Length: 456
Image (tube, rainbow, N blue to C red):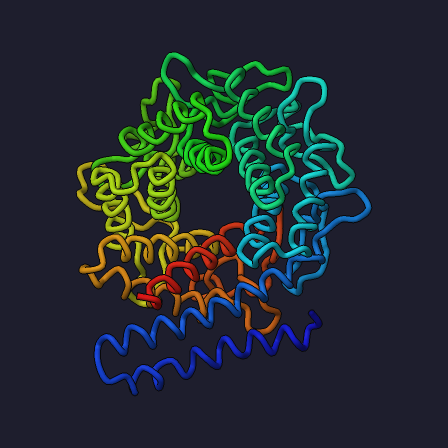
């Protein structure tokens, strides 16, 4: 699609947004209001989703060295080192595969996914020691981290995620075989038989780093929730008994150990699941270790969805304990993370000693957290339809995204909300961390749910 057509699509999105209130004013009843509201948002999301895929593909497809280009500036131009990380490479495979199924076996998107699958298989898989390299340069040469070639459970989880989705979309058994090999590699080298869960860091030869690596402790919330996510995806196409056992174990660790009774997650842990905390440390020490110990509001509301998705895959879709836990995580995020002035959810909070509520200590609003919140809000509203505040907050969140996160000039999603950081207008549209996985998943899930609501 040329730039003129892209601008027309985005302009249409904002035209619909500007006319939203006028349309709603004509509704004659509450039920008319809800239906008109749903239909308007559904149309806007469908347009934005289609435009999103046209922006990413084929622009980021590297036909010379394989895989996908990583670095895109704010104008959607290739600019930067173009290193390739297993996380973002595999996320592209998943996003293209998921979209191919959503658009009813789109050949173009399936070709994009196949291109990435071949790069994972031929370049990022360590043919000597197995497992996936974490980072390679633009040509595919492995890169060291702190002088070592380190593999990560987090990165290998996304490889499984992308491979399983590509198999589901294409039927390519080679992709499923590689996903199984990756699961078995994690089982052999990362799984902790004594305390459960997975060690995040693995040496190239497969030795688990049980004391952690560098600054980071051995176990963490982020790799755990994404292992849950990838095992859920793999279980859909490979209902293996051991896989189910590991999926259920992770599910319970995240729901009952990592998530606190207040409704937020601790972030890092010792190998026996003792949380890393700097609550009793000095203010300076807390600041220096913010990454290890804070309330990550985006991860909390995202994990509410991941728990519900896993419970469905496990045949526990109506499990009241899980539903209430997910609801509590969303409630906590709304209560303490919602920006009452501009809308959207802040990125980080902190429970200081002897205080009953967290203070916001990071007021930025990164794209991924806002997209995941949108998805979880609508999902919780469908589980608890009598509690109207969830759907209302979903509408408010969608409005925030349209106003502060969507680039009306160059299209796509800003790195973060421009209400807090106006310079995000000039931040990269793509990097080894920023691809279209969070945004496309959220939009596709919301479109499906809105269509289902409209049909009732």
